[in-house]
Length: 169
Image (cartoon, rainbow, N blue to C red):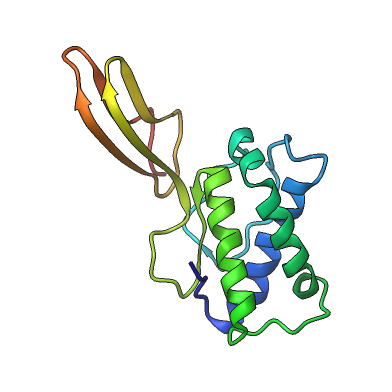
């Protein structure tokens, strides 16, 4: 999955994604990111604080370290940031996919033809015998998406896509 942003948005996109990467690789990774600078090139609305799913973070640890090793030369200014650079675009796309998985939020940047940034949940269930809820939040601003798939829902079971006290502004 490659990232597809307009040239002018690329430096801000890289900076934002690389800062999230460095946070996840640091000793502060368990601390949710509340006061982060969200660039204007990010479309949609992120739910803050950004909180990492620890299991997903652990599962992707080696991948994150590899992406850091590749992208650090761009982030520190030693290599030019150009949309024509296939290595940069491919690895930035891989980083975005990892961040979306770890944070459970879509990250969409200016010029991309994909759903806007914001929280999302994907659930693939076998047989549901109890209750499953995709998203339960007190307040959601902007877009939120739940995709659920259940092979079978037993009698008396409950499948809820989204339960929210307030959505939007």
